[in-house]
Image (tube, rainbow, N blue to C red; front, side, top):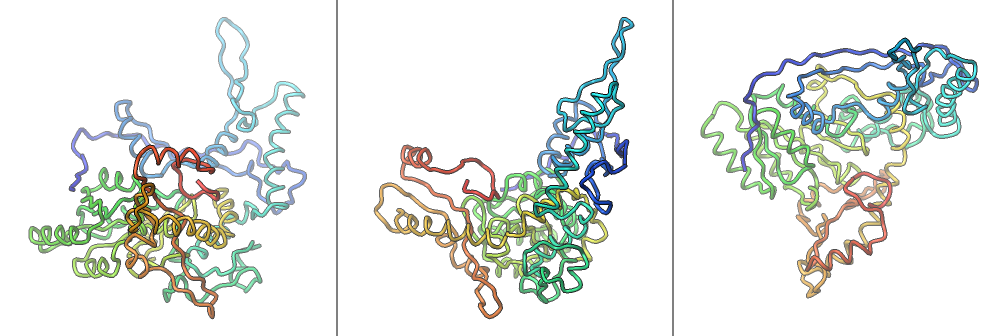
Length: 465
């Protein structure tokens, strides 16, 4: 299936605004916070705002929806908390009345009209700083002043060189052998891989978007290939921005090779395609491509391979040796592992400091949670997979179970991490995602209605969904 981006139309000239929001009072008002800490209410915010004609709203919405480049909810809350409460003009000579904020936690520090109002506003400001203080001192968060340390710890964790997932007091601890900072010489089984090869982005789709932009920057502009089913926004992104894409829904490499041969015949000078984007394994069919063959085709035809390993995750599968760019998720934030020389020139750190602080904390037990998820999921798939019709059973209930252990098994086993007890490396599992089809819609409804867990379309929670 061939998809082309719709580039034709009248160009739209937007207005770009760099909007800085500074707190009115930068003094530390929190009695519990020591002078070395940075409070949330003392940090300025920097936004880039795009103004465009109303008739272009549909296009702007698509960009905002698919690229993941909008601001996070924490950054939005922070910006609202810094904005002053403005007065509203009331006609007929009446006095100006302060506009009330919709949420007291978002209201900023306008000049109060009475001592009571002043006390209430000070309490609001104190509550923000106090909650941050409690989280930092009695919870597990690093202080805001250690955002750079948190980001580095995340990059080391993703690169696989931070062995022990524990709180780190400072960036120096990562360099000077802190007891909590066990650092491996080789990351993810690849010589030379380090945190310098990992680039953090605020959302998963922002990582995909920047990967695509990076491919366009280092290779001639050609269509990409979406191999197998990926996250829906990935396909939309490849369709709508750039030269377009070829969609191979079943992930068949024979179909890919046909496209490569046809495009090479029509243009023997340039690579036939820009890049292949795929997930390992895919969602929802949990299929795994033949990565050695794909790598061989990429070397032969000079295209790039971008692998999203979110579903498999880097504790279960090792795919970096087959890829030019690996997108990896510590839910819900993503990173990109890629040759440093490619990305350094264009990379901009837009990861909000507070988001990084929370993500560092939440990812400390990532290894443990992945293993728990793997072990929780496998018995179910192992029970119903062999009992399905596709598994050779005459069961009139389960039609097929899609799980890496039963779907394209040979391909998955090639990239599943082998255990090495001597090195303290656990064997990779099969992930926490599976799909199941039933012999009838009625049976599927009964199963769904009686399944005692949370239900929704998300991915990456720390509970069964």
